Amino acid sequence: MTIEYGRLAASAPAVTTEAELYAVPSGAEIIANLVITNITATLATFGVAHTDASGAATAEDWLAKGESLAGHSRITIPITAKNPETIRVEAGTADALTFHLAGMKKI
Image (cartoon, rainbow, N blue to C red; front, top):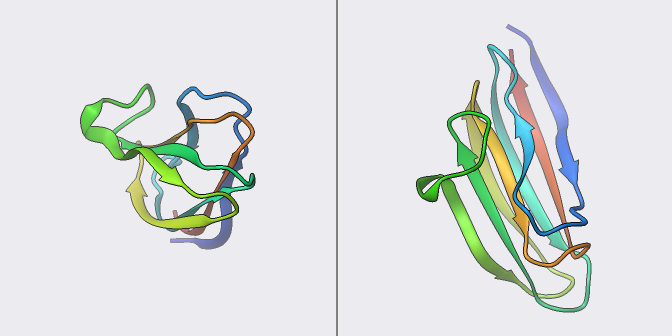
């Protein structure tokens, strides 16, 4: 068993569509924090989904959907996942949010 610590994924979406942020590699599991930061001065909305496999999120996958985040603020969401699960994100305003997933990956 190998344990690695650090950044797993990061994104600053330029569009407002749902996208895969991170797919847990084969045979791995993660314990991480997802930090969502609003880099603008105005309110922005976001979504975070934890899916069973790759592909678009369904209703039961959303941990947060349409949540508001004030300008120049951030929120941290703890995440645990194993292969073949994915973490998907959605920004309600293009170029307003960053998503940063960091923590431990055990292979």
